[in-house]
Length: 336
Image (cartoon, rainbow, N blue to C red; front, top):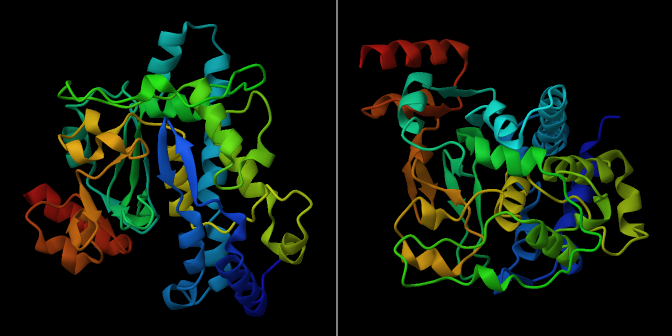
């Protein structure tokens, strides 16, 4: 069923003005973290009319990455379950990296292989082509800008798509083992664990808990969460039977950032970069070595449109390009 512009306007207004659904803080790995949704929901779908003539398509597209990750996780599990392999061999069968980009994004595959070859893909790692860092005094939240890519290592894929979650019987408490040792040069915070995942589920920080069933993986949960609130049934959102079932007022980039960072899908960024400032911030799990947006656009974040991409000395990732422009970028990269 196609949404009308009037329905989209009503849904956007609802998401932006019913912020009582969202908690403001939660204890995450022993640290009191600001939760972003009570601030970020005020911008939901606000810019969609400016970015596309197909506003309904834009809104519906916000669920597709989560739905796609759920489907891909089932595919990997069926593939791995067909063989009675050890855990180590099952992990090694996953791809070294999963690269998630828009269909109007060019990636220099030769550069990608060369750049990521130096890292151990079995270590859980998430890297954004362009990481958007919201002002830390507001939310302390970061998320990948989808058009310029999200890269997940084999270890992160295992946490996201393969490891089942069972919370019955698991005591949920702040994980004291997550405290940071400032005497270590490369200190990292708590990694992915059942106790931490169940703790985050109990907090229900962004309305995901009602979608959870025992034995799900995180990618299953992302899919079920996205499927729960159908946009075509928007009038029923305001009469939710379960107060914990906050409506699905998410941009796809936000939902990727929320699950990756709060569920510790990847190891803490201090394992991959020297920056002591983030040692006390356990939810920073997505790296920005390729580019970031904080006060200004840096690195790959400037690569929007072929003119900007060709201006650099090395073509890596480029967003907002068509198929002919992709051919031009490929030919130029091969001549460098």
